[in-house]
Image (cartoon, rainbow, N blue to C red; front, top):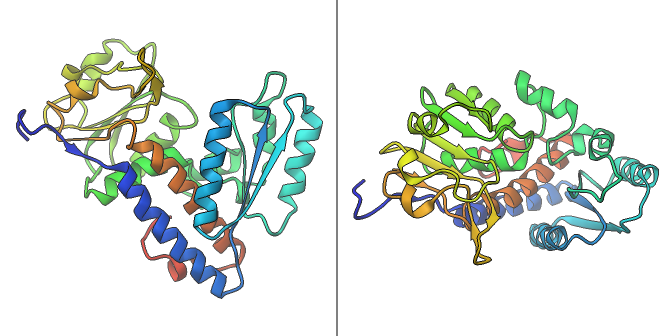
Length: 299
C-alpha cells in the first residue's frame, strides 16, 4: 500500500449493516418456530449520551423484528429497587437479552447489578459466568465491542493466526476480552496500558494494533508499522466537538495496510453484535442450533 493511496478502509458501518440484515433473517427463521427474540434495556437516570445510545439500540432491535422493552428508572432509584427490576426481567420468559445501560448514577454499584443478570441473558457478556466461558473456551455470550472487532477482521479476510496483536487498553469491556478472542485465534497478544514502558515501540511491533484506551489521538501515525492493521475502538470528542478516535487517523493511514475510521468503524459493530447476541440467546433458550437459523457463521 503506497503513501499516495493510504490504508484500506475497514468500513464498520457497512459491515454492521450486513450483520443486522443477517440477524433479521435469523429472527424471521426463529419466528417460524414460534420464537421472537426479546431485548430489555434498563436505563437509570437521564444521562444524555446514554439516552441517545439506548434509542439507537431500540431502533436497531425493532428493525430486526425483536420484542423491545426499555425500562426507564429515575436517577434516585435505590440499589435494591434496581436489583429487583433485574430479577423481574431475569424471570420474564419473553426476554432473552438483558442489559443495564452503564454508567449508572452515583451511589449505585454496577458490579453488583451486573452479577444479578442471568448469564444466559447477559448480552453484554459481562457476568462472571460469561467471562469464565470466554477464558476457558466454553459456551457463553461475548462482549459486543470485542466481538465486533473480530467480525470486522473476519469479513475483510484478515487472519490473526501467528500475528502479533498489540492491544492498548486493558478494560473488561474491550481489552481483556479481545485478548482472549485473539488468543483463541492463535495470535500472540501483547497487552499495553498506562504503565507500559515505551508504548510507541510496542505499537510499532504490532501486526494488528488495537487502540481502546479512551485518549484522543494517543496513537501517533509513526507508531504504526508499515503494513499493519489498525482497529480504533476509541470514541472521544475533539476540541472542535467532532468525534475522534484513540488513533491519529490521518497519520496512521499513511503507514497502515488497513484501518477503521472514527466514526463509522467499531462503534456501529458494537450495536450490531448486541442484536446477534440477543438472537443467539433466544435460539439457545429454545434449544435451536444457531447454524439452523443463521445465514453467516457468527457465534
